[in-house]
Length: 426
Image (tube, rainbow, N blue to C red):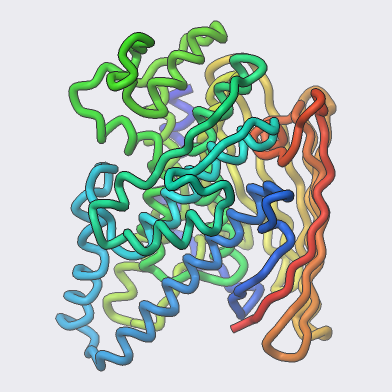
């Protein structure tokens, strides 16, 4: 397995030297209001897409502030970049260090929503710290503390009930880290379609390296040892996950989680596309990050997820036929644990003759023949607004469905989500 990923790592490092950036299919960003934001929706998908829109706003604000200050490319803009991102750079793997601006807010709040949504999906009462029982009040309150150390103490979820089995308990413990991985996927997918500001790299990297970050931020702690009698020594999410893996009969330790997290960072083409875009950004302040492509094929990205059945890797790529047709593809498999794998095949179509309306459909199938999928259409209203309608089928017998299903009471194994959203294009 290590040989396979060493090959993937070499491929990810070398192929950008012979490739070009993707040309964006869409040429606009969005800010939306969605029915998926409602408490009753409990939608990981919707909140994740909201976080990507916030990340895009950060890129816009970054540009506007630089223009307002009248900075000249070179030493002035370099200092500007260091000042705005220095807090994150100084503590990239240290979760106890306050992070500036949005890389912390996006990651921490979506991480906590991962815990929150897994409990809520089973109708187990749960609250964010501060006694918030819904996401957005917690999100905006967290924003008010982001420049103070208090932000580091406002980032956990309390539950008031027991899970029906160890597997569901594991989904709660791993929900935060899985959400951050999911966020890194959404950020790259957004860049693939529209491009992204180079300095959104720090939100991406923190999401991508989340599991390793947890481990590096606990020096001296043996996260493989769970002390049920001493709650103050239980460490962090990793310790709970390792203990629950033990109960599930999985021989998965902290070193396995750290290796998988680091592999996902370095065996992803977008990591190098971001670094290249930051370099180019120092000379061309209009430069944007776009994933690398080779003859229309996107250089793959690797994501790591933690499931009761074991650690899985998801490899995502796609083929861009032209500026109107894209065919996304991904393959996820358990690398350590109980064997399972699944594939997602998609199609994205932009209708330039209809003011850049778009339609996307994804079909998921597992090695056991279990299925899921999504369809979403978006239509402009004038030049600066749009309406979107979508539906998604979740199946808990798939890896993706089990991690993200909004509701699963009464032992339901499937759920259909429908949503509508309105927003502006800019």
